[in-house]
Amino acid sequence: MTSVTAPTILQTNTFAKESLREVIGVASIAGLTMIYVSAIGMLQAFNERLIIDPILTMGYLVLFSIPVFAGHRFTKREALEGLEVAPLSQGDIAKAAVAGALVGLFLAAFALIVDTFPQLRDTFPNLSPKMIELVTLGYGTSAAFVVLPVVSALLAAIGGAFAWLPRKFYKALLVGISTVLITSVFDAVIDDFFDWLPAIPDFLYAPVSGLTVVAAIVVFLLSATLSFVLSGRDTSIRDRLTTSASVPGKRNQMILIALVGIAIIVLPQFLGGILNELFTNVGFFLIMALGLNVVVGYAGLLDLGYVAFFAVGAYTMAILTSPLSPFFSPELSWWLAFPFVLIVATIAGLLVGTPVLRMRGDYLAIVTLGFGEIVRIVLLSDWLEPLFGGAQGIRQIPGIQVAGTEVSAITPDLMVYAMMAFVFVAAYISWRIEDSRVGRAWAAMREDEDVAEAVGVDTVKAKLMAFITGAIIASFAGALFAAKVGSVFASSFQIVTSIIILVIVIVGGMGNIAGVAVGALILVGILGGPNQPGLLQEFGQFKLLLYGALLVYMMLKRPEGILPSKRRQQELHQEEVLQDAWLDKQVQTAELEGES
Image: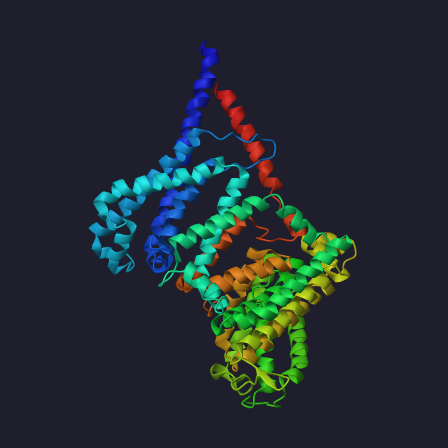
């Protein structure tokens, strides 16, 4: 009997230890995350925006979504190669609830420590009485040890219970919640768009901000029902739009492009000046991201000084068009100066590409980073101040003359049209070159440069073509930037701009034009650029933190990006990770059998 039951007892004890370790580990990470969100002032800053008036704010949404995701961690199942998917059990919900209760205890203990030692505010000014009141839900630090564990345990159990729903219901629930959040957060966009029909914004939004309770329920039910009805049909629709091998597929793609074009023409007339300015900023970064996507996504060359090409385009346009150019001022029109901008950008691409022909990986990234800093320092140098204006920059740059009208910052709707025109040009260049002979050479070089050279690919020419193409596309944005702002300063071309452009490409999806567009809309349109506000101004002081957190998450969970190209997705597939999981399981089984 002992020989039969001993392995079972050992397995039970091992499972209990693993479960306890998992609960403590998840609870610790979630609890520390909630403490961090509160301690840095994010809870207070986000709490000023209402999601559903008066019951839910963005601060509480961010804070208490953490135990929901922690609870979902216990019921989430991944199909690993060579392993059976473990069935769901009520024990998973119990573990989620226990972990949620521990998370609440962590947060309550944090509030008590801050309240007990007020001198901590001398070092951490965000640890204010207002923060304690928000963290404890207004019940005080003593009652928080009861309220917070109960609330967190309930939310974690709900997060774990999501996995029990049928997929159609689960998807409909996510669509409904997401639609409510988007409708609430994008109130400025919807309010401006329906300016001609004010009854809709009046029904949706409360007087201050946020959706009304009735509007939130209606939006949730409509979107969730629509998702449930259309569930299973979205794949066929997507296939119709993405299958280009057949004539109907091409026709559907052309229809989609035509609809997007019509929307771009019509929308600026409905949006206000602030939103047009926002879309213009997104357009700047989208053009630069499309150019960097050529260098990084297509050719696999890590460029950290890409903002230098943006500066080259802007300063070349400024020198050739501004009457206040210190040394050389031919005062050309924007259209006459634009070809010279492309020529100078080509030369800059050659200057960067030639010294790094034999460099790869980290060494290439460091050299391009140095090039970006060299350009910025040269623009600020006293020696070249007669040419570039030094810290004073170059001012009074004229706009773009189109049919007797000057397109500049004072005409934001026309600037959107100009920006979108160059976005389409940059996207068309990227699309056409991807499947060309040069594009295939870039793909071979990205996957394995040594093998590409062995099969006859001229990697020297391919690298130079990548840098030149990327530089030319970036100069588009530089030339438009000079015309829009009317002045250029070296402070506009910080190295952080290059980093953000790279994050856009990585998060959106390297090698995919649509993915880059999604990345620009999310990172710049919502969070904001390095010096530009986004749609959610509450994120302003935390946007670099959110950039970093999003980048870490994408690298760990989805390295190919949100909308990756199929080729890039196959390259970054997790076959090795799945195989390692199978091997780890085999080792654990062997150890268990040996102990028994």
